[in-house]
Image (cartoon, rainbow, N blue to C red; front, side):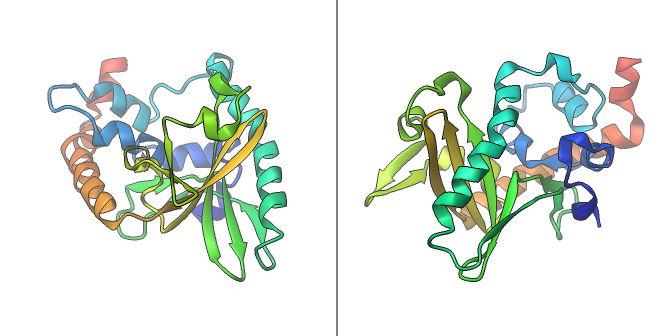
Length: 216
């Protein structure tokens, strides 16, 4: 029900409500690399939805990426429909982990086809390198192995919670599709850190209202 009712994502208040109090994929990297000596308060403010950034203050990179998402998905569909049987791409709502309900993600799209089943589609639009070919623009994130582009392990964190992912890297020169393989050991390592942050910091913040009191 939550998945279906949150397909408008940022344009849906219910989506915003359901993300509050959960650790979502866009925050996985930050939490998995936070130092013990660093105060968690700023991260908690974001995760609990206490300080939302108004649309007019969104960085230009974010606005440009949002604007180009549809173009990237169109190119993705044209490229893959020739090789995948009865393929279609649909909007995605908030996906909640069935075992750890405090974890979730909101992919850009879900790809469905007879040959591969379901795959998550994530679009990354590189504003600062928008005039370069995608494989050149993304050189710090990817590497080539046996003629196939792969995502470097350190950049897989945000996409590690799902079993099948296509990362679509977009620039004004076109797209590059990178298949991201599920890394069981990376995900298990991340789970320990995410669950520790949730139990140590988020649960107390939710129950006591400490962060909210700091802002009042």
